[in-house]
Amino acid sequence: MTQHAPIKIRYVPREALATPDVQPEKLLTIINYGERVSSQSRCPLVTVPLSQLGATRYLELWSCATSVERGQFENIDYATDGEILFGVCQRPELATTSLEQITYDIYADVIRLSNAKGYPHFLRIWHVFGDINGIQQGEPRYHRFCAGRYRALAQFKPDFERALPAASVIGSRDSGVTLYFLSARESGTPVENPRQLSAYRYPAQYSAQSPSFSRAMAKTWGAEVELYVSGTASIVGHSTVHSGDVRGQLQEIFRNLQALLKEASNTAGVAFGGIAEASALKVYVRCPADFPLIEHALTRTLGQDLAVLYLQGDLCRSDLLVEIEGMFAH
Ligand code: 3EB
Image (cartoon, rainbow, N blue to C red; front, side):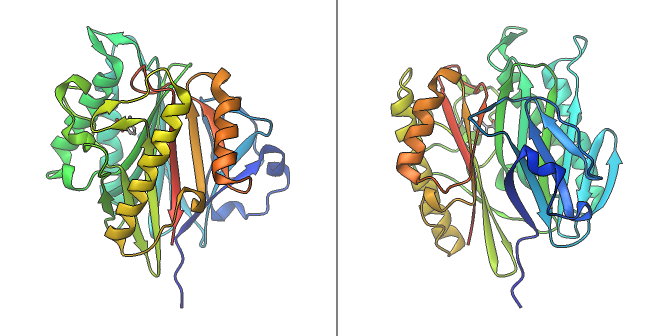
């Protein structure tokens, strides 16, 4: 018997929500981007405050093979299917608390929840917060975020740098912190990119407490291997390359993704193929004016059939113009 990955992530046009083809009890979550929409579904609909670019507005449907159990812990909504835990937390950023402290608090709660439910191994985490390139108490806000994340992981997860999840950190125009994640009963295998210095070893100029994520996470589910690829930018070694040149950044991202897929295939002992074999890609675009060029370059390189979602998002270094993440399966 082939055991499939416990979850499938699909992009469906927003209108499809009126006539869903998935039973609500088999949905881990529905993720909506940008303007709020109302849902008749009994499954929680999470609105991530990043605008979609492009003609069609999509929702992300995360479905699984079995019925899910839902719950709440602190203000984290979660759903489990016996193999995987999905959780989402949205908190306002109050002037009385630093971004570092808010990040620490959310991480501490998320770690407590995942430990208590028996899904302690983080696979993939997304983070969205406002004013990512702003300065707070003399330090870039992204560095403050990294410090809070690092402090919580170091406190609650001994040896955490050997098992870092894949991640994305995106700046929104709205304030507030959104974090959503997948964790599992059994650990996955982190994968690093041979073209890039591991982020957790970046020099201090990128954050005194280094960014705690791996370039990708490979996870075996029975006969299937799933690869969760972190937000990938035009960074070689630890330096941004092609500053101010969106075309050059995109080409460098393709090279980074190809190298990472090759490394992941070697590590996992399966062939993930090339970028065009992705089951889903997400592209974060800093300047909406760059969107037509980016979309054109992606369809020319990867074809029309690939599921790609484009979002307006600010990136953690102010010279980064575009970033791509994705999921692959074998
Ligand atoms: C980079 O490679 C680009 O701090 O979790 C990408 C994905 C980036 C995740 C994170 C940061 C993070 O350094 C930025």
